[in-house]
Image 1 (tube, helix red, strand yellow):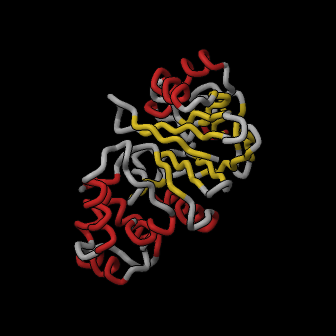
Image 2 (cartoon, rainbow, N blue to C red):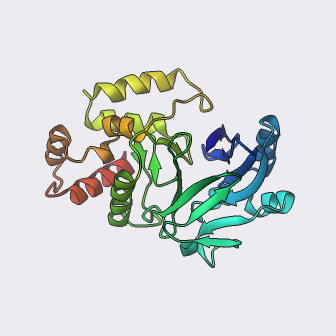
Amino acid sequence: MQVIRTYVPDSLQNYNHLAVCEQTGDAAAIDPFDADHLLEVAREHDVTIKAIWITHEHGDHIRHLEELKARTRAPVYAPLTCQKRFDADIWLEDGNRLTLGEQTAEFWTTPGHTPGHGVFYATEPEPVLLSGDTLFNAGVGNARSGDPQTLFHSIERIVERANPDARIYPGHDYILNNLGFTLSILPNLDAAARLRQQAERETPDTRTTTTLAQEAGINLFLRLDDPDLISALEERGFDTGDREARFIALRRLRDQW
């Protein structure tokens, strides 16, 4: 399943995505912020929006849901846990499979950023994770509308379930801020410093897409057993007794950064 990523002008640094079956040209629009923009991107790539996939209920992820549905007549797929927050045609539970043209994707529930969050995972021709606001390039989502303990367990499950070569397609262009936070905690993490230098030369539309394996080198929330990270947290007075405690400490520091 090909993923077309597009940075949405005049947004909250949102990325929108089209997941595309290359055999048929059928596309799923993920979290539509701007219907005009997505339809133009679809025209430029000669694909047809046949489905709308929603990761969660925040307003910037469903902003033009109704407009895009009206203009494409595409069915809306969304997490069952988002019922009563907006309308959908098909409510998804963990492990449900979605067909797009001749290809399939899997839906995983990933609460934490919000109680109703989910992500979409596909494996052909290469593994991809459309991660919404759960997992970002070099970071994870905040838990102001959810719960950091729950988010920790969702991230752990993603790492267990996804192929390490899966490319990460999050809902926002936060990589520069996230790498800045990383280097504020581990200033000698060379992989993060190199990637930040690269990202500074790029635009939101040309930003590199990281894999889950690359994230293990730069994303503090995936490096919870790193002795240098544990020392850095202890120096700041945090409980580091287990992975969950270290994750929650990092999330608190990121919220204050």
